[in-house]
Image (cartoon, rainbow, N blue to C red; front, side, top):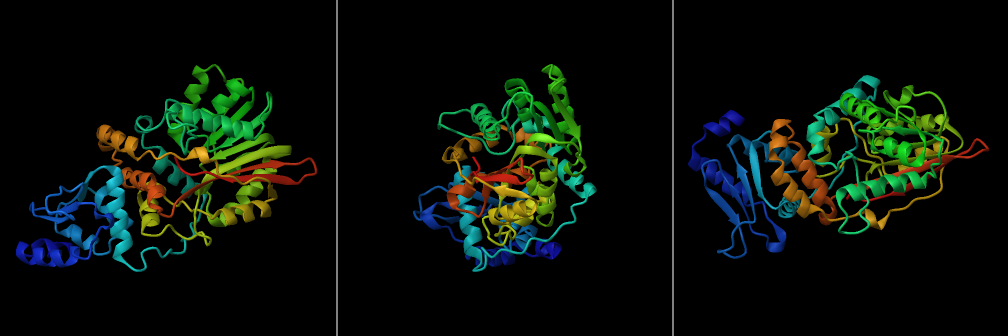
Length: 408
């Protein structure tokens, strides 16, 4: 059908296109435009003289076939594959895209059941490496100097990213009441920032695990350069293969990869690794849907295909239920107000300055996801970031502290 569309006369196509895109609309009166491969432009502006603040550039007729079902998946896929471009400030782009997707179908917000994935060691390793082994240079373009992943704590709007990430790590380590000499396990340790800080500033004996070869290599190098080999170790290992006992456990932005059907066994494994009176903090993205269904508007399909393969997001209610079934009891749930900062402006500036890194590492597909994260909170798209913590009592009963935080 793509070949048929490309072979049709431009005049015929333009009439079909006009009929098709007339169904697109944009609320709030934000001026925007669609530009075709032949240069012809269609505008949605409340005033004839207004210049479009967002321009959607369709590069060939075949793209229209994909856009016949306009959602975050088809728009994101066309962009990731270089079949369309979008010009404008990221906040305006989010507004236009949200209006397009929400207005295209009466059932746009309908959620699909998450398709269960067989989370074998091999599948999970491949999924992690797909996301994190792009290149360390790529992540350096986006993260702070310590390369801390996931959300940050901005106590003040003037806080730098470096300050906010350090505040996040310190908040976690204080929350688990980490003491000198205690054994700490960090599940999904990333590039090692948390275990390095825990060993250097809190005097803990730290072990980090990751399935990413690039994270393992850099974390190992950083431990050596910091002279902390006697207090800090990183292992290339699946959490299911860890043995031993730990006083404290952290898991930051990892349990999204566990799978809904494996949550109970995941928390049971944490329970078994905890020493009596131990504490664990589990931090991760959750769904705002009570049924833990797929992210609507096609967002879930796009993320699974390009960003986080085989990720499954539970509702906080399901996470707490499985936590309890795994032997852990929730003792605290909270959403720190200082975790949220509208960073659409700085992200827009960063995107414009990092096109070289995106092109070099073939991660054009990251941009729709970053835009969705940046704009999702303001536009109330269904996405939420949750945090959970846990600890174990001397009676052999494990206690979990669960909390929520919004993505910064």
